[in-house]
Image (cartoon, rainbow over all chains, first blue to last red; front, side, top):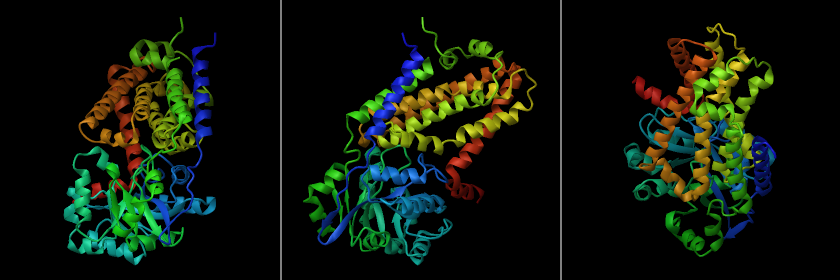
Length: 287
Length: 199
C-alpha cells in the first residue's frame, strides 16, 4: 500500500497538472460598436511588490489576460512603482495594455484612482488639488469606492473636475446600501461610470469591469474615451450604467453582458484542481 | 496504523511533540528550507485558488514569490532571538521547528481556499463585511492564539527555555517579524495613517 504522504503528494501534483492544463486565456474577439472598439478594462488593481496585493505586477498582467481583460491599471497605494513594472512587462510581453496608476489614500479622507500618470501625486492635498495634479500629467481621476464616508472630501470643486466614479465595486455585493451610496455619488456630477474589482488577489480580477468605447486598442485611446465619458458598466442584478446612448447599444448586445461575468469559462478541470489541491495539501500536513 | 506527521501532532499536543523533536540534530540547507518552502507552497496554492479559481503552476509560483518575504522575516527574527539562546539545537533545526508552529495558519489557509471554492464569486465580498466578517476575524484570532501556543512549546520544550524566557523569546520574535511584515506588506498605504496620527 502506498504511504499516505505519497498519495497526498500525487493528488496535489495531479491537481496542479489539471489546473495548469485549464489555465488558458479567455478568448476575447475584438468587439466593435457604433464605430468604436469596445475594450474590457479594470482600472483598480493592486500587486505585491510595493502594495498589498497577492500577485506580482507581471502576475496581474498574465491573470488579466486569463480573465478576458483588454487593459488594466495597476494602482499601488500612494505609489507608482508596481504600475511602472507592470507597464514595462506588458510592453515586452504584449497582450494586455497596462496603464500606470496609483490609488491616492489621502489624509483628508478620500481614496482616488489616478490613471495614466508619470509621477506620484501627493496625498497631502485636497481632492480638487489632487485632480488638477493628475490632469497636469495627462491622467484621469476616478473616485475609488466613494461610500458616504468619503463624500465630504469631494466638495463642489472636486466634483467639477472629477473624470469618473466607481459605480460597480465588489463592496456592493458585500455591504447593505453600498450600491445606493455609489449611485448617489455618481449622480452628483457628470462622471464616467467605472466598474473596478479593486483586485488584491483574494478574488477574481475583472469581477467588476468597465467597457470603454475607444477609437482603438491603445493607452491614449482609453484615456481619451474615459475623458469623454464613453463607458458602460454592468452592475449588480444586470443593471447597466454609463453614457445613455452607449448603454442602449450595450444592453442590446449579449456579448458584453456575457463577457462581464467573472470566471465565465470555469469548468470541470478548475473544480478538480481546487478540490484536489486542498485535499492534497491537507494530506501533506497530516501525514 | 498510520502515524500522523509531526506538524499534525503539534497542532493538538505540542509539548510532547517538541520534546520528541528537540533532541534531533538536523543541519544543512534542506532542513533549513523544507518547511519554509512548504509554507510558500500552501500560500501560493491558496492565492491561486482565490485569484484564479484553479490551482495552476503560474499562480502558485507567483503567490509564493509575492509572499516570500514572510519566511524571510520570520527566519531573520528567529536569528536575532536565537543569538541569546545557548542550546544544543542547530539553527537550521530551530528554523524547522519554528515553522512547525505555522500549522494553524496552514489550516486557516486551507479553510479559506475551501470556502472560496464552495461559494460563487458574487458571494465572496459578503465575507469582507459584517456579520460574516466577524466569523473570519474570530477564526483569524483563534489561529493567532493557536500558533502562539505552539510556538511557546517550540521554545519551552524543543529549545529548553524556561517559561519566562520562552515567553520573552516569543514576544520579541513576533514583535520583530510582525512589524517588518506589516511595514513591508502595507508599504505606502501606512503613510497617510501615520501622518494623521502624528498631527
